[in-house]
Amino acid sequence: MIPNAVQQLNEFNGLLYTYILIGLLAGGGVLFTIRTRGVQFRHFGTMVRHALGSRSGAEGGISSFQAFAIGMATRIGIGNITGVALALILGGPGAIFWMWVIAAAGMATSFTEATLAQLFKVRASDGTFRGGPAYYLSFGLKSRAWGVLFAVLLIFSMVIAMPMVQGNTIALALSEGHGIAPPVTAVVLMVLTALVVFGGVRGVARAAEVLTPLMAVAYVAIAVVIIGLNIGSVPAFLADIVAGAFGLRPGLAGLAGGVSAAILNGAQRGLFTNEAGMGTNPNAAATATVAHPAQQGFIQSLGVFVDSIIICTATAFIILSTGTAVYVPGVTEASQAASLTTHAVVSSLGGVMVWPMTIMIFFFGFSSILGAFAYATVNVDFLRGRSERNLLAGACAVITTGAGAMQELRTVWIFMDTAMAFITITNLVGLIALSRWVAGALRDYEAQARDGRSPVFDATGNQYLPGVLPGDVWAGAAAPASPAATGE
Picture 1 (cartoon, one colour):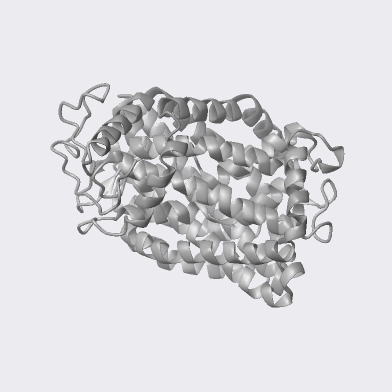
Picture 2 (spheres, rainbow, N blue to C red; picture 1 turned 180 degrees about the vertical axis):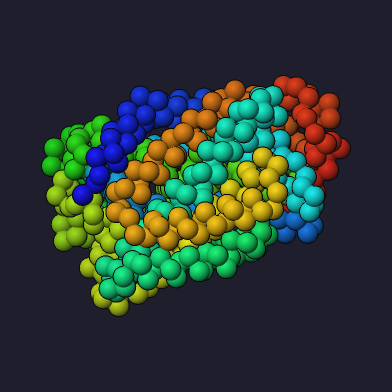
């Protein structure tokens, strides 16, 4: 039973998303798409080439691919499994359609925030780079207060709300699938988190670079097998997604209602899983050593596609392809969200898949906790905190991971929705105000590529920028090139 205060918070979230956030997400995405002339469509091939060719070139820092992997460590997580299941339960199959819409616009949003993170990044004392919304809001908008506000909100979200959601789903998976008591899971997670979170940004980068692609490939492989076994039902559940999105068939409504619930839950769960506009991934994007800011924008934009169009869709197809054996719109309870995807996999492939799915859920959730802590650390640095404050942030992440493991599923997700809303609104306002810088950086990249050159950014006297870029990171094209292809 959800406490009354939490229920009131859920109602507040509904108003916040319906009347403010969805409009900002959609409107911002459209604006960024127009200003970049559809960068997510025109440069899709460029995105793939940069992602495949960006593992080296960091010169002792963090490579473009490692920064991408840190971002994917939080993007590809519990939201792809439990979040999608919850969207289906509350919003019906139509929620997936609106998740796609948010993702399509979100690719331009992600390009915008990642490029800004590169433009306004600073060099840290250890030789690596730091940046993200706190930095580009502070330097770009010339408002230290706005940057501080974002940093505080993000630290709260990443060391309190995010670990609670991840710990909760891991605990539910182990409890429902294997009878392991949540308090036991809580203790184990707290110990493991404590052992890793103090390894620094480079440590998280190395771990994420190995784990994230393996998890994504394994999960998509399972989805492909299940869809192949149920190939005849694919047209039907695609039709259900479209029909549910526009209320064409009342039987496809979720527990929370019809079309409005589909839009709301599609937007909420889509934002949680792909994080476009949320201001989290730019913290990772800024750490990369690249030749041109747009390069990391391309790579982070591709991350939204991989997360929402491929991974989230795979989860939806896994659940919907099993027919009514596992999921029935408007009937399946929200409490089943944590185990719904696992039950669908087991329904298709047998009981042998229980442990592989549990292990996968564990690594999805755990890598997200680590990535979230890396983001928090960047923002603690922005606030000029000392190392003991980073230790305090780490301690909070450890404690809330354990606490979340023992809460109700809806409670932690409602809490996370509130945290997401505030940091996203704060970030989007800045993105809209600073989008001219991104348009200029993209024009600079394209002009060099058209001339047959490998784009290298130099902010000094750059005719495409709307003003003088603060700092000296990009003065004289200081950042080394990575070997990624640069075709149009």
